[in-house]
Length: 320
Picture 1: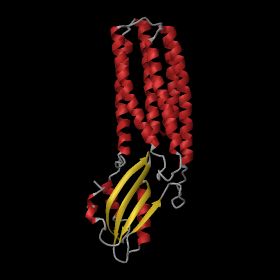
Picture 2: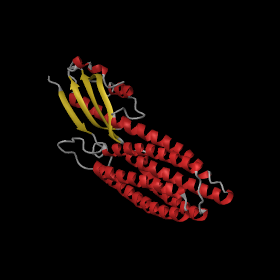
Picture 3: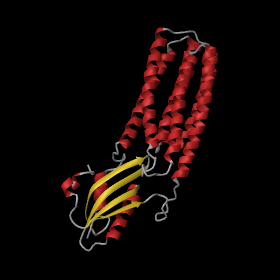
Picture 4: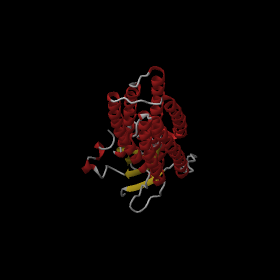
């Protein structure tokens, strides 16, 4: 009996399991949210530029510069969301779903650049404080705080499982914190004349942004390196598959990774006992991977005897 390769796409919209899910519709919804966020951010950026120029507030101008970076990041995320729904072609058999991960990765790198800029500006302001019209600064900063809160709420719904939206949300969160710092700085300047409050608060906010940027960079880089999805124990997956069907004698050469956020994939070799029903074992493997571990795309190689890839140290790969 020859080695048989069975490639099964157990996507959530398949009728076998009753999970209705339209990835194109979901990506379209994310794209609309990103477009709204971009429009609001760009509009508020223009208001802050005008308010900063009028009041002489470096804090508002700095926050506007922050929003320029964020508007570009949102635009990048929009492009990522649009490209991600393009169908597979002859050169990219998996499609373009990983574009959202690339967008999240670039967004994270952009945050590191932004933190460096904030630290530099804070040092300049500490050394050379300037007069600020705190009343105008306060009004514009409050408006920015409200707009950023609205944008963050718009993006928040799916940001936990989509690194593209997570990257955009991270930028908007930085805007929100920047606006809050501008409000507090305006109040401190207006009530106490503390011109140093603005750069000090900016430094504290840069530390928060740095922590979030590092987390996003780690997650997106892990996906790009095809690491095992967070929270999943590949050894447990392998052990569980050995009990999926009585005809399975051994499971090895297991690889589990993500193409994009929430899109788990796996390849595995299944060694069957003599006279085992290969089709039944295949269905049992697919069912367990989908229902217990949420792995939607599975490629299974059925080995009727010892693994034909033993020369490649088959059993030693992909499960540690």
